[in-house]
Image (cartoon, rainbow, N blue to C red; front, side, top):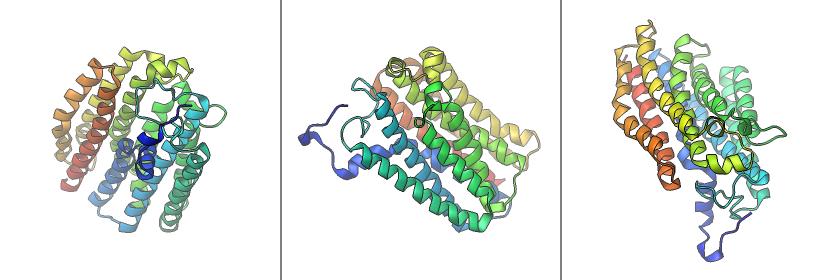
Amino acid sequence: MSSTPTHDRPSPLKIWLLASRPRTLPAGVAPVLVGTALAIHEGTFRAGAFIAALLGAVFIQVGANLSNDYSDARRGADTEDRLGPVRVTAGGLVPPKQVLTATYVSFALAVLCGVYLIIIAGWVILAIGAASILAGVLYTGGPRPYGYEGLGDVFVFLFFGIVAVTGSYYAQVERLEWEAFALAVPVGLIAAAILAVNNIRDAPTDARVSKRTLAVRLGRSRARDFYAAEIYVAFLIPPVVWLAGGDVGPWMFLTWLALPLAVPLVRTVRQHDDGPTLNAALARTGMLQLAFCALLCAGLLLS
């Protein structure tokens, strides 16, 4: 485990912001916006449910990030030659016990948000929240972390796409329609693309510690193709939902206004291996998801 010289040590606030990995937080926020916008489109909006779902999603995201920081350091995955930002546990910025405590605090706050949602929307929310927290912990924690077996992308697609969108929608209307599942797919695909950039960047160091992410299993070249497919397929789905007779309108094409952000981003990920460029691409993929989902929300509200 490496350590940071005292004179180079960031402030405590910066350290905890670094630990929370703010570049990944759009993956937690965006699906709540989409699920809520679909509910508003159908004539229902609960402000309390929206705020609780939004905060709960953010706390689950932060808790998962902290849990992964702690577990990866324990397993030796975060080495000094890693191309990504410094991880606080492996970098010696925060003692492991403090990171673990912060993980518990973040998940506890998510549970509090969930209690409110259970009160107003029923016990289905309990199953959604419990599954989301468990999946976040077991991503790199537990005896057989599935993030080390190439299943992390499936987890992100499901929990930051399908589960988050449909769960946010359910918290508003207390029922599920096929449009909620269909519109959750592009949200999940772009969320998985955020993880894909991270894993493409870390593939060489992950391979050395037997962390067999999808990028390690496929190789960087095919992982880049997979990233491009995730991005471009996401743009196809909203218009298809309209064309298939969904309760939405042609405003679904608004999402295509984000294509000028997506095309150069895909090109960057295809052409570069260096850490700083891929770190920037990771942040830009998060911003792409926010832009895409904001346009999708606008399309729903205008339909």
